[in-house]
Length: 218
Image 1 (cartoon, rainbow, N blue to C red):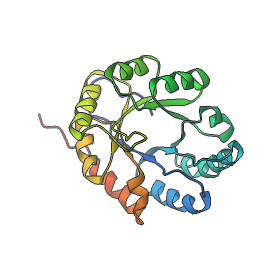
Image 2 (image 1 turned 90 degrees about the horizontal axis):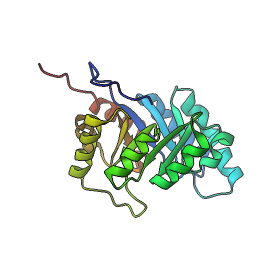
Image 3 (image 1 turned 30 degrees about the vertical axis):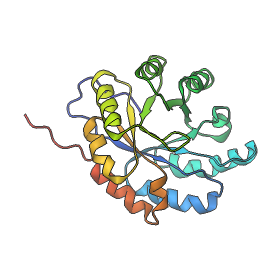
């Protein structure tokens, strides 16, 4: 998940970033995840672990890690920076600037630390200045609320224009994928709505089609 070069020619193709539901049964979910990984160009998977004791959570991450990593993608834990090394994960997604700062201290430079849940431009810039591997925009908060889609597009466009650190745009539906790519997102996150679809792999393939960057005109 490297930084975009300044003024790339052509722009690197955006990639998918899959966000799992809270996982408590890896036997059931592993098949869905494997099919989704095979259906498109997935850069990373954010694993949300269901509430459980640490040993159970570590075992769940270890069970799913090879499905992701064998496809040369990164497995990130949603929080739980303290479990990353023991779970064999590649890094962590931190929510909020304070959690991010703690994760940076624990995991960098060996592992990936990305961040979301940033409500101000200042926090986003602070995270980038402190070596965030990516910034996520548009994900719902714990109450399921998110900014307006227009505000998300504006924030991504601003970021893509000014900063080299990659940005991930959270798409709440298939209809949001292409506009977020057009706005300048480097990665498109697909969340719970993906896994509610019994044909999740087909949805991943369709999202990959929607992400084709249109050729620029002179």
